[in-house]
Amino acid sequence: MKYYFTRYLAVYPVALLYMLQDSEYRLRGYFKWLARTKDFRTVMKRRTVDYTPKIKLLRIVLWGLWLVTNIAVAVLIIISYTSLNYWYGVAAIILLLILPYILAYGITIPLVLGRIFIQKPQEKKMIEVAREILSHHSGVRIGVAGSYGKTTMKEILKTVLSEGKIVAATPGNMNTAIGISRFARKLTGKEEILVIEYGEEHAGDVLELAKLSDPSVGIITGVNEAHLVSFKTLETTVDTIFGLADYIGDKGKVYKNGESLLVATKVAARDPYVFSQKGVDGWKVTDAKTSIDGTTFTATKDGVTIHAQTKLLGLHTVGVTVAAIAIAHDLGLTKKQIEQGLSNVTPFEHRMEPRNLHGAWILDDTYNGNSEGVKVGLELLAQLKAKRRIYVTPGLVEQGSKTISVHETIGEQAAEVADVVVLMQNSVTEHIVKGLEAAGFKGDLLIIDDPLEFYTNLEHFVAAGDVVLMQNDWTDNYQ
Image (cartoon, rainbow, N blue to C red; front, side):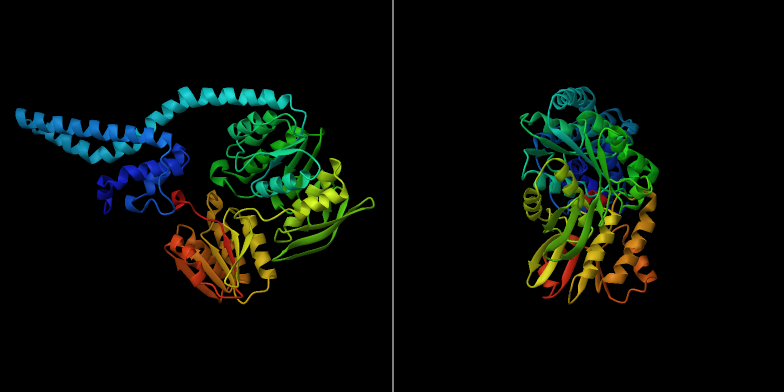
């Protein structure tokens, strides 16, 4: 009750709008955030409300609720005074006490009604239009699914295949049925290849997206604990992502990441389309090397030799890259086109993206949100020459029942590599610390209360020769 008064400050309605917007109007996440928030003055740390038309409308609803409630309180007080019936006064006090809840929950009513009567019918129509567009499109469809690595795979394919074909790929995180539908409506019909990323949040999602877009080539980039809060079990996660393979069946090739343990346990022993650092589908990889400047290797098949050179960091990128080589070769690209395309592949924003800061190298992997990414990131950190190896993380979100074990493992892995570990104080920090202690970590440990201040002043923390790996980031709704 210490901070209950913050619900009556001017910041409270603004915080409610922010929480809805930052939760992407998903009421389950909004209600959970609402339930665990004590001090509403501290809700907005990373950014502020973006006053979109939707937010402006909700603000009107919010102030309408506030006005009606306060009018009701005033009426009850007047009736209590004139009638000498103090129960009306008690009712007025109760109404004032629950006013914050009236605002917090009442604001969701127009969202629910709008979703039922406006959004759902519009979305259904959009999806049907997209289904019609895609069913008549002549381009080769490549579907990309997985708990992690989807965007990297998509961007590698887009970059390489564009050297010889007209390629369109779903932009950003437009990997839902609505996102894919919007993508479909912008197609000209002249595209020769469509690269489509599939998101997953609920059981069966990937299969439904595959039915919508009808891919003939599939790529499963890996499976892990990401979104375990939604899926509940890893078996459901695996089955959902392998919906892509179920859809394509024997009609085409489905490339699968053999370096993902959960993927490896699902595939046949001699599946030729399982990719790794060794190769895929007859392509043999040799001489793989990685540094702060990028990754190189040689891929050979049936007398064709591809000298691969990308600016991606880490040997874990070799598998997805050789899968892209195999697909590009199947689609008719020449050796020269493939090699040129690979040379154009650069780190993607906030995904193992290097930058130099006063002689220190910062590896920005803050869009990484999975345990496999942590593992390969720390392996890369171990391989690079450095005065100090510094590991920075707040931990991972949406790990469900695996939260404790995943974060203890992160601590154990970091202890083997890092000279300095910087953690952001939150609900999983203690588990990472426990892992560090269990592994006998002897380096320096810093626990930061204000992540934004730390990142803003990073230049004062690092020194020339340091290599700093920054993995994952928690938005305000996970604090």
